[in-house]
Figure 1 (cartoon, rainbow, N blue to C red):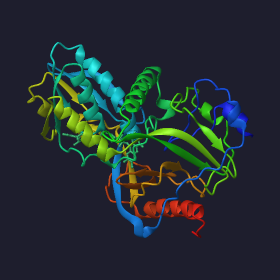
Figure 2: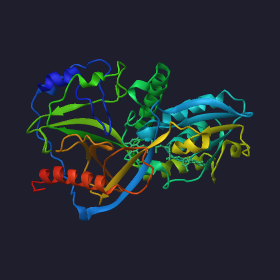
Figure 3: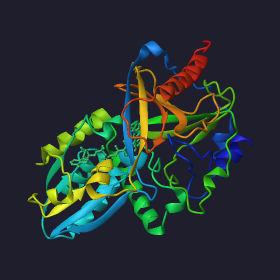
Figure 4: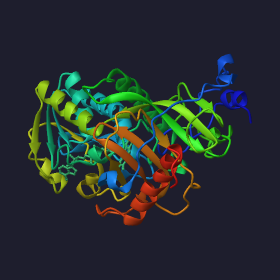
Length: 395
Ligand SMILES: Cc1cc2nc3c(=O)[nH]c(=O)nc-3n(C[C@H](O)[C@H](O)[C@H](O)COP(=O)(O)OP(=O)(O)OC[C@H]3O[C@@H](n4cnc5c(N)ncnc54)[C@H](O)[C@@H]3O)c2cc1C
């Protein structure tokens, strides 16, 4: 397939980390310049060597096969709003589900709210409540940097590890679509060093020509990634520095979790919020709170606290290299074929101020926070193969 056909058809499905499909809302026409040969890209290679690895981190993504839970409920005379189960998309979707949680809260007469949880989902819900005039206290067992959200790769991946295709419903899809659109816009407005949000080109590496039909998906439902793929371009052999035949460039939003979460905490406090460190073992513990509105943003903690047995971890780990400020792109995929063993994803690399994160695991229902050494070797060595080849070195 030539480049024009690729662009006209909507392009390769996987444009972001962990994305299983994408595609525009309706095919976009190819621009005349898109068909012209491109000047070869020059990009600084990552120095991927074992002696530059500074840490390996583990986080448990809060996944439900049926997708996140976002709904009002009651707890005696309190309004209880659930907002949890964001899988591998909780950094991406949180502003949207937070706004919708705040809308449920505004139907109550009171303007005092307790948010349970201080990760990405709790902090953004708290800010959305404050923006609507609520007096908010966050109660949480752990706060940044000791929450799952800090362990995230944190690309804008609104559908990653989020929902099983056959469990999607019209109602859930509508909630998802609105949440993703709100978040996409909000994060764009936060770009800059204060929040640690920025645009970066993602390159999806492949030896296979992109399949224009893959965007259709196989559930009969529209792709969850449609509409979040502006500016995508295909680079063919000789047009890019990677050791694969093709590289698909997609401008995408990067969040640096350590900067972002601290900034959200600061903003929340600046707007008069309070944070209380506290663990809740059962719903009855929540009855001691003074707030008449409670927003449950406990992530994986909701499994024990509210008995949601559908909530399970997708264990992920990142091995982090010494930072290289000159690396200004991220990648997905490498030279090895797509892994087929359970728990292994296509590899991905994300450069940040706090290091270059290398990832590619999603182990279902695995609860340990210990790194998986086999996966660590696979992820780091697969990246070494890519970047050594880019540097003209032998792997
Ligand atoms: C390796 C990896 C890569 C990822 N990459 C991405 C990505 O690229 N893009 C993306 O959008 N997402 C990504 N994610 C997913 C993202 O990190 C999660 O979806 C997100 O962190 C979930 O946020 P949360 O606020 O629900 O949970 P958490 O950050 O875990 O926060 C939960 C909060 O609830 C509190 N809590 C829980 N139970 C209780 C209790 N009983 N009592 C009191 N407090 C309680 C906790 O202490 C904590 O404060 C990734 C995750 C991992 C591990």
